Length: 251
Image 1 (cartoon, rainbow, N blue to C red):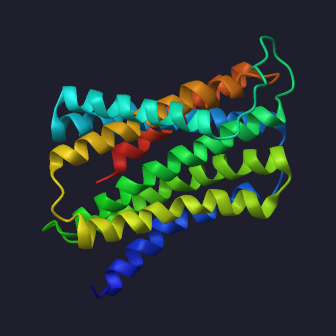
Image 2 (image 1 turned 135 degrees about the horizontal axis):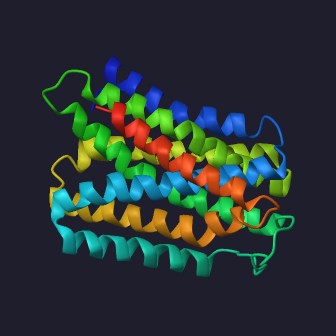
């Protein structure tokens, strides 16, 4: 059960992304236009990660039908979460106008929950990479994950801070998304080391489903509630392009 130096470095890098991003997100209160653009950017990254990375990976591991089952599980899980957690009934404005703080808080909480669950299989993936024969593979994966976790941290902590004014709570909730990386890594290394590719494929599909739900149900509609919906749409496209560019340089 000993943890070597390389493992500590990998875990430190992977957990630094959410923590640094969350710290940046509460360092200042952004203007509403920028805040909504952050939400839209996060929605674009989630959709791109789901359709360009997670779903293809899931299909490769377990096949199209089990992947579809996993996606459905993720969608239903987020629907259930939305029913059991406090949730604003404030509708999205049909015309451009100021965004509701309640809607911003709802969107940030749902996004934090989605990223929290999304980071769990990331930890398992790093543990699996450490068992690969290619030297440094896990380290490269950790750097890649930290790179996209930084903007995720900004996009989760900033809306919550903006909506509630609670800087420390916003930071802790957002930075807490680093915990599943750590838990997933140790479970993958010491307990689930023999988890089947089929089961992992369903889990990855479920993560894609919950991220699609949060993007389409919370992030994108809320980002369109401000006075500059076209600016938010441009941020959405930028988020998609960001994931595509990141995928081009990942190992």
